[in-house]
Length: 137
Image 1 (spheres, rainbow, N blue to C red):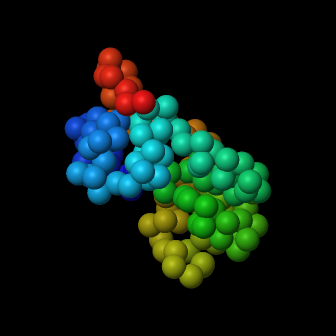
Image 2 (image 1 turned 30 degrees about the horizontal axis):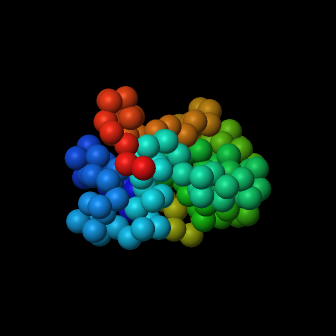
Image 3 (image 1 turned 120 degrees about the vertical axis):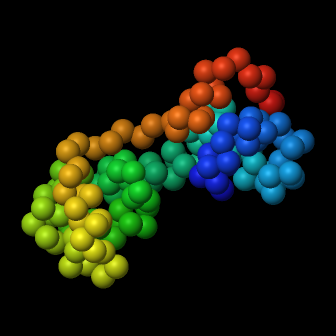
């Protein structure tokens, strides 16, 4: 849902700050609150706590754009990779494309990884946070 809000752009992200407008975006209280927290603070407590419960290797793999908890867990279990550097090395050796559901494009993308990509606040959210917008309580 947060990704969809970001795709809709700054207007949707501004709208998510106002709880009264959530129904127009199809958001309920719980989800709206989480997305508002992401827009306002740049992170969701729920996600940070969830990520902290994962094994360090899985958490580190999730720092790569496009790798979520399920994919990170699978890469860790099936390739025994414990870091982004190990994932890149496995991709360079051709091991990633051997996994079910993986192909040459994903393998090539992982092979290009240099270092862990630190989690960043998406540009649209950064833009809104840097402007002096009134934040919904």
